[in-house]
Length: 208
Image 1 (tube, rainbow, N blue to C red):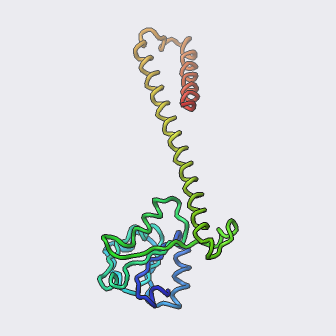
Image 2: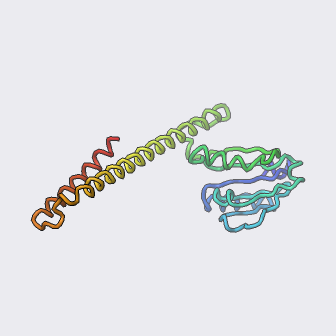
Image 3: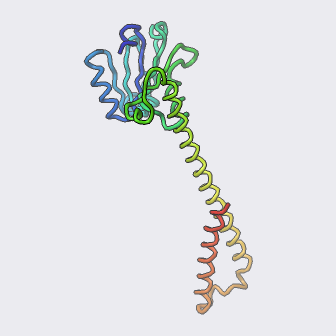
């Protein structure tokens, strides 16, 4: 509000949910008359002109899907100022949000807002603000790395299982004349062999 009114900056406030966006818009509407609310990515199919003093409140999805055209008059007042009101799930989402400011060589700035629910971990004050933010970024990035490692292991397991299955089918096909597929007496045994091989694939792939 102060940035938009005092400095005539254009401001984009990115919220995590529709509820958060509505709350922010409701709070600011009593203080600032020129507020736009973007909740869905399909609401604005044409480039949106951004003037000095404009305040845009948007969900993260709508913010990414809306083409903002920063007018020269807004650029002359410092360009777009982006405020992210939540801790992004990973650094890529954070960079995408902050990247809305200062595009194509234009001036711009960005700020990360931390909600109160994080305060029970680190006592927040102006002196330890950097420590506070860095703590959560490191925790977030570690969680993201662990998820990526687990996903990589799962992909490797699936690929190994597929390779073993292909090998099994190749062996069966190359010896089809020697195997009693049509023998009703031996068919249950062959089915058991296939189930045993499937179990082996699951166990072997999990070790890779």
